[in-house]
Image (cartoon, rainbow, N blue to C red; front, side, top):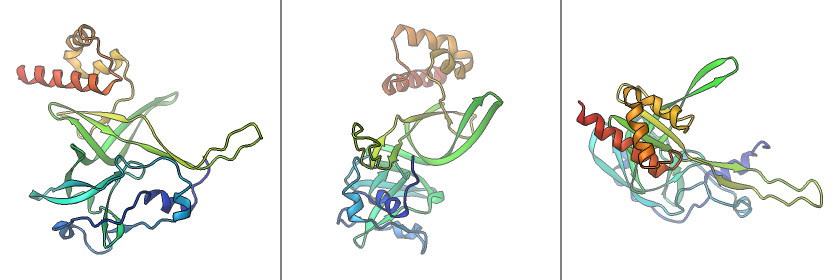
Length: 244
């Protein structure tokens, strides 16, 4: 993929901006000067880009929960899955929500998004390695084993045809398969699920592996499907609580 130009980078971050004021009453108390990140866009570039980086093109009523304040702050936000930011409008201009370290969670689109560090393990020819990343994770299940979802949208630059037989590909956003993470009670951070093969996934549950395998087989669960994965984790949590 070609390197994204600086103009286009500004454009894709701000795609879909609408002339709308966000009700951010009370939210200014956590956004100090110079902690806003403002993005401007080039209208001509926007018209060429296909797709969207947003989960919703609309600014939706949301709740921001702070770590030191039980009462949530009300704001109209939209989530940019390409840049992993929540955006809002103030004074007719687009801003990115800052002070992430002070935010406990954000309630958006009937889901709870948690800013946190997550871990990914990789195994290669020369052994295994672990990397840590930060981002907003949507919580699908909360309990002794919590399940999280990471939304992802990738940007591709335009791809001019090499020959007269090739089709022109415009600059575009494409939604990628989501990433899922598990976090058990003793885990410091959520961990990316690298494999959805039944045996590989179920071995993470230790002594419960055999029982969960029977549950998966009896109910014909496809662990690559989100609804079935959620069903498995909820079953484990219910069984775990009954045993403790």
